[in-house]
Length: 82
Image 1 (tube, rainbow, N blue to C red):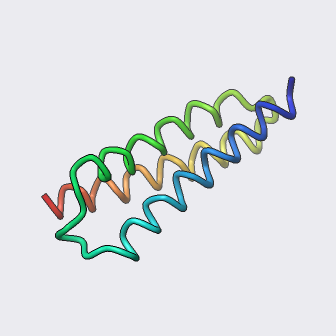
Image 2: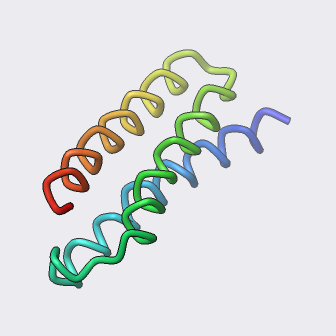
């Protein structure tokens, strides 16, 4: 069961990094829809939840911190764009 939890945590952390990166590098920031911005904020939250389910403490807190940092960064972008 542990490898599945680790895989899910890493997968959602990568998704929370790659989706907003793709969103803000390929589109004009003013033309990004609200739905895309909400999804960009939703993925780090889900990534944090999956990261906290990882049994190894070092990896758990590292991935959770990365996801929370990404969430704060893109929350700032969302507030600045809207």
